[in-house]
Length: 67
Image (cartoon, rainbow, N blue to C red; front, top):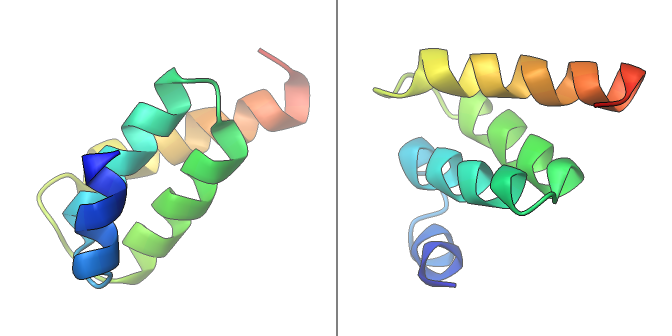
């Protein structure tokens, strides 16, 4: 997956982690997606921050209550 290579090359780039997380979430890999989102949000401000926060909240809600 090219996004994984991008994250490996620039691990401090939160937007790359966000985009990887969206793909992981679509593939049903929610725990991996949550980890990427948590990491991205911990790195600071980025253009997709609000969307990342929303997706993380949705994934956490699903984990707690089921889909």
